[in-house]
Length: 315
Image 1 (cartoon, rainbow, N blue to C red):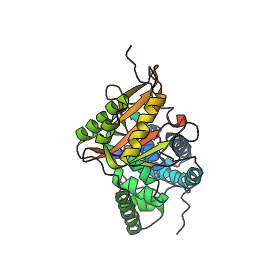
Image 2: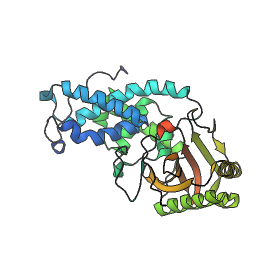
Image 3: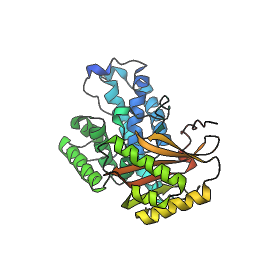
Image 4: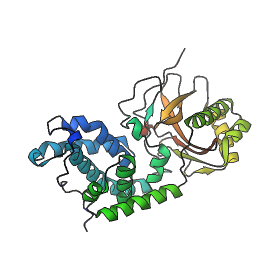
């Protein structure tokens, strides 16, 4: 069976909820399609490239043969992402240090950013996006489409040019690998927020004991500077090492005007480090288990922060 998914998709089954085939169908589904592309690629820039190509294909498609625009466009976007994942993996293997997904940041007291393509009910944490990088393109597509967007296996099978049973196996294998990756979401969002706030308070003080109290003994600190901004080439493991590293960063880099702000990072409580003018220099996302931080994901590569809006700084 061919793995070339660049061909045009087959007609999808009708879906009355999808609406009529019109020139506005692509725009009506743009947010959803952006969500799919971002979760498949982990990059807004790559997702936008895919949407542009999908729009061009939609403009030249024979609309008379399209029964369900949403299903048709989902197939087009998935196949384009599938093609991109192969080249993206090669680029990320030569990336300096760890490659982390581009964060989706929003503020609880402000409207969602245009860059936040994620729909609230379909939020995927930065930690999960990171572990999805370990999957094959086919596994990732099956998992994201089925487990995140509830697309049926028959439709996914047609998109990936596999049988429904083979597609179920792809999703099942992906699910096991995600579980083995150890990314467990906190059952209580309040517990997650409390741990993040405790980390922020201890960080602001450079308080090693306070950091040790909120960090899991086996905490893992991931950072992505892309070779542009100083960041670790590999993860830092262990509460003692992480707490001393964070305290050292505070002592070295935190000058008057540097601040820590709360935000939602991929739908979960996270933090932003920002300058006096509100420009964001780092986005931090966390995995919290049993009240302690088990993983931290720190994005400082400025190329991945271009869509993060400035923090409003109170004089």
